[in-house]
Image (cartoon, rainbow, N blue to C red; front, side, top):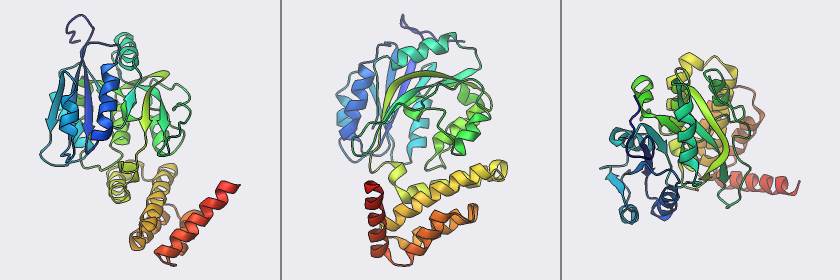
Length: 317
């Protein structure tokens, strides 16, 4: 049964997990404040920040600020927000990101007329890279409905078919069936949640770019130690069900290779070498990991020099 509060339609609970993002949290909260959809609550879950996060959150009227006693990761922070949410719908927003003003309104409109088994809705989004350069909207094509098979293709590395978590709105009731986010995953908790949800619920999609994703140097995707551990946990969780699928193995191998490069560039050649070997164990006879594995034996300084030279050559081409 829908929970309709006030005159603005169903209540939407906006959950913003944050860790040491005082410098971007104001931008995210301002974008929520500008939403044309009025019936909402905002929950900021501070995952043990040591900066001015609480002060920034306190500048915005009506924001519920909750502080975790220790840093437990984004999945745990989002789960804490879900547990406090009173709304029928939940919308995630990373503290780095922002929304266009009509984002919530257009998603609620679609979900209100959608079939009951349509439990999740995402939107296209713009990506701003670490250099401040924008990309075309992603995903480029609206894909919705039963994605139980298509989600696997997405996880296996084909073109993105669902939005990032900052585009997601979902019926809170679906967590009763598919469960909360997996807190054991240090990364890719979004992929895991989409995998589980797609087996039971259909997706809706708004093909307008209604969110902006900002890449940050210190995000999880650029924290190679955290990501390498997260990839291992994700593989252990899903290897029995999907481990025999060549594309799934290739997807994980490609990410392991990327993390290995980051490790080597950070000076941890031994760790990087192990990750190159893990990538080759998943998918043997890959040219790039073999070449980078060989480069790793030249030492951290030489590896970084070779990598930089290759990047300059690519830029000239």
